[in-house]
Length: 479
Ligand code: NAD
Image 1 (cartoon, protein in one colour):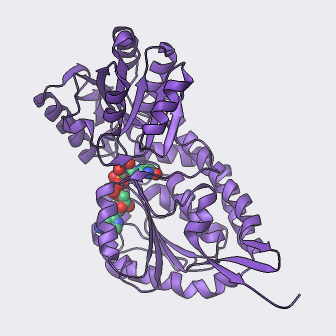
Image 2 (tube, rainbow, N blue to C red; image 1 turned 90 degrees about the vertical axis):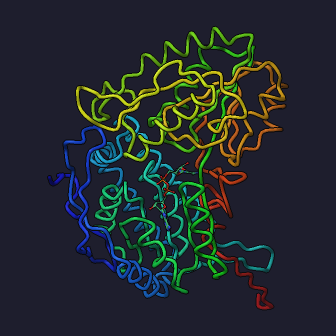
Image 3 (cartoon, protein in one colour; image 1 turned 180 degrees about the vertical axis):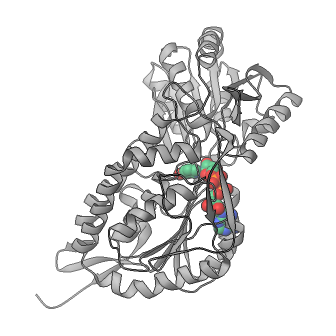
């Protein structure tokens, strides 16, 4: 039962591991007959206590020097690097993504954390002529994160929040408790003062309201689905709590008739099927110019057929299972509804076994005959399903790409810069790509969303400082 990778199994509050009575058994999504570990979810009382501990620790922590905070967080980044292999294995075990994808996530988290350390070291104070501008911490920050990038979405928020002088409570997804426990074991080892960083495990609907009821809470930084983001915003209501959110996406990739087909198909598979389609900047919509439609489809079907679905811990696996049962049920439901509405399953569309093992495996799926009246054209799919739309005019390609309430990522494949410019100008998305797959790429840039994909100041790139601080200007007559 016990995984060798983590020793602890509970929340971490005020420097103590705090078990409760509520025990949960975690399963391996690639092999449902294997239980990974028993862990304890926090009670609402634990949740309240975590905010109070963070509040108690705030006054002292904000008065520490930036050099001190940076030296501690540099130690944390070094221990992430030192433990990269175990951490990647743990992410694969708990999340299902392939070991290559997990290792990529750990690398990306280290890169992002180190960027914030370097940037904030020099940018929490400015002097403009005689006037001084200080970026002051807000207080207690509640960080709520999803399961699909269980380490990088946490590091993205945690490092800038702490360096800026805030104290934190992390509420990770109930589906990524182990990765968070691992991270907090490393935090425990770097001797961060008690209460500065707290971990609350559990379901959002159970611990969420208790976490948000205290007036000590000054900011909620959320990453997750748009529905939950809206719920949390309602929960905060008119309380004086800053709110910033990174939410869902329904992203498109367009292949125009002058595109390099092999390169575009490779990007389609990478953008649509990486992490079994469970990443916010992955694509669920593919727009193909009718002049090259047959050629693209031939090459795409071949590439998708070659995807080896299986246990992510095997190096021969290209695509792991979905993370959890609701995810698997959602995919079956999307395909069923799309077919009812006239879409055609070209390949995939069903749950499968791998090596005869029951896991949350779903076959990589291509759906054609999709049009702008179908629900799947505007919803977030968040799985290995690509909806294909054939067109020959730019207007309908743009309007199909912009369908729905999301505005996160987009890519256009074309050899013509003018066509690329026309698309980029009209697309409602914050991350736009030309002849490139659709992920977040540059740690100095904001990772944010337009429309209902994002809210408030992004907590990433050079914007992180503004998300986690308030400015104080000092005008002085003293020289
Ligand atoms: P989710 O919305 O179900 O859960 C996100 C977090 O919110 C979890 O920790 C969950 O426990 C918590 N939560 C749920 N209800 C809550 C409540 N009432 N109060 C407080 N917390 C609550 O999302 P998920 O399934 O974990 O993750 C997938 C989603 O995340 C997708 O929509 C994806 O697009 C999005 N995502 C966005 C980005 C981005 O940067 N834009 C990055 C990664 C994932």
